[in-house]
Structure formats: structure tokens, C-alpha cells
Image (tube, rainbow, N blue to C red):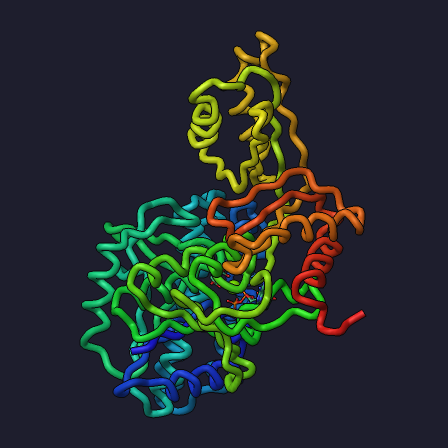
Length: 465
Ligand code: ADP
Ligand code: ASP
Ligand code: MG
């Protein structure tokens, strides 16, 4: 069986839902297919905004409710008639009424816990999947709706971006799907703890749901359908002349997504890699296009690099001084202090003189990180062995990725000389020992120049001026 996932832009209205259903039906194997759907485009943002408004006692949350109601009920009207419509409308109305009650409760208590927020955030997926299942049934197909927050994808209670219990999830998902035939419609993004409290997998987490389902049932393939022709060499919103990649490795896809390539959620690859299942990225708007195949040992391509990605809103913290030279355990103190306050380190760079370590974190976590490091290193600072930690905000991490860079001299030289020619100032550099990734930090204002310059130097610019 194949697992297909369709994102918000692929299922934004009745017309698109029809297209998606057609694609899913065409790809059934022995009459079966599992599809994972996101919320309609913009609905998760609307739900999160409504929760915030309700918490603040602002009646504006009712406007969001009205928009959600209109979008889903209009689509139901366009997609179904007769008894199928009556059943679907009743199911959607019940969901919307639950949502209204929950938001009203939030308004009354003026408090929205992370747990309540996870419950509210998942309504977009639940409404959309019921719509799809209702449409398929109305059109005479066998279809089943599965709400993944009802004992299906099992996680811990780290609300907002919960960690998956793989063993429990694989067991439950496999046994639930095994007896079903036809089109199995599964909500992306949402999950629950073992004792049934609602959680979510983090923003854009539906890709991850699809890979978990695929791994659980040992699917023949997992396909993620987007609004682009596949994985491109760079983000097409900022870079001119991007190319569609034919095949890339699981590791390259992991690195690209970890460093901000929004096309795939970064956790998606791991379950598939472990179970040897290939991942395909396809275009819902253009199903005939081959797309990108992500697998172990992909066919080599002729380019020196595979692609580039970047993370915005990064901050750099520089620790400098003689106090760390030759002292074993210094780095572990630094990372221990950051781990205790749950700050995620995106990039590290240490000069071989051991005179400075620079750490890159997200802007939003910079102050927490700075405080934790100042507390940890107070004694060294007072003894004048270390300078005060320096914080620079408003930065961008750029990552250049590719298996072909391995063991090839000259890539780094060409990379930084091309940036130098455009006066892009590089604040820190790190290269993974896998030689599959070179990442560096620049000022955010230089992002577009840097990305286009590198793309042009290694992959061309599609003949654009
Ligand atoms: P969905 O919500 O349908 O899952 P997203 O909008 O989250 O899809 O992701 C698809 C978008 O990711 C594309 O429209 C494109 O703008 C962006 N993107 C960023 N980097 C890349 C890349 N390297 N290749 C393809 N698309 C990319
Ligand atoms: N609907 C969720 C979001 O907008 C999950 C997803 O789209 O994958 O983040
Ligand atoms: Mg998305």
C-alpha cells in the first residue's frame, strides 16, 4: 500500500479536494490507499489566532469561527448531495459546535493552556478529513476517516511539538489500518498521549504523520504532494533559476529540511530511513511531472552541490578568552547549560586555537541562552579568563548541502570567494565531518544576495539576468 500526504495548499477548497481524491483513487493498490491530509490552507493559523483572541477576551475569535464554518460547509455543499450531504453536514456541524464550545470556554476562563491549544489547533485537520471521507463515500467509494488524535499516533506530553513513541505508534497504526479497505483518510499533525490527551507534532507536522504511518505499515512508498515540482535546489521564493532534483539521498533531504527548506518537515525522513522506504515529492498541481525521489544510494547527479537552504532569525553568541584553552570539559559545560534551559543549538563553530566558541541559536531563544551561559561562566568571567559573552541578533544561517562535495577540494574556496566578491560578510563557518554540509552565518539583510550568488556559482541561474 502507498501512503500519500497532501498539504494545505493541495486541499484548500472543493475543487482541489476533488483533484486530490482523483489522484488517491488512481494510486490504489489492491483497492487500498492511505492518505494523510493537512488542514485547508490558512486554517491552522486561523485556529491559533482564534485561541489567542478568546484567551484575551476578544470577540474576534467568532469571526475566525465563521470563516472556518463557511469554508467547510461551502465545500461540503459543492462536493456532496442527498443523504451523503446530510450525513457530512451533520458531522461537520458537530465538530464546529465542539470548537465553538471550547473557544467559549477559553474566553470565559481567559486561559488557554498548551494542551487546550493542541486540541484547538487540530480542528482544521479533523474538518478537512471528514470532508474528504464524506465526499469519497458520497461518490460511491469505500472510505474510512481516522482521527490521529484518538489513540493512533502516540506521543509524550510535550505540547506544541510532541515526541513520538515509535513502538506504541507503529503497533496501533498497523493494527488499525490492516483490516481496512478503500481510501483510509488520516488527519495529519495531530496525536495524543497514551492516556488520550491531545498533542500535535509541531507546525507542518503532517509530513511527519505520513512517514510514521508509512513506516508503521511498511508501505511500498510514501509520497508527499506539494505545490512545487519536487525538491528544488533552493527556495524558489528567494532564488532565481532553481532546478528540480531528480533523486537525492535521505541524508541530503534531512540536512536541507533541518536548515530551513520548508518543502519537507525535518523529522519525516528518519522513520523511512530506518525501514528502507522511499519518499517521493510530487506536485498536486502538475501530477504528470516525475517529482523527486528521496532514497538511500540515489543516482548521482552532475552538480558539485545538491542544494542550499537557510534559517532566518538566528542569533550568535560568542564566548572568547584564554579560560577555555586546553581545559577538558569546557564545551560540555557550555552545552550542558544550554540543554538545561532547553535551548536548541543549531550550529557550533570553534577555532582551532580554542580561544573562542561560537554558538548559533534561534533569535527567540537568544536571551534565555545568554543568561544560562553568563550564569554558568560567571567564575571564569570574574577571574578575567573569559570576556563577557557577546550576542549578535538578526542573522541568517545558510547551509550548502551535497554528497558530491565529499573529498572535493576547492568547493569552500569558491563558495567564500564568490560571497566576498559581493561583499557578503561571513561571521562564522562550520563544516560537518560528513563533508555533506557547509554552513555559515551572515547578516539577514544579505540573505537574497548570498543565496543567489552561491546558486549561480554552483548551479547556474537558469539563464536569468
Ligand atoms: P504544504 O503546506 O502543502 O505541505 P508547504 O507550503 O509547507 O507545503 O511547502 C511547500 C513550499 O516550500 C513550496 O511552495 C516552496 O515555496 C517552499 N520551499 C522552500 N524550499 C524549497 C525547496 N528546496 N524545494 C521546494 N520547495 C521549497
Ligand atoms: N496544519 C498544520 C500546520 O499548518 C500541519 C501541516 O500543515 O502540516 O502547521
Ligand atoms: Mg506546510
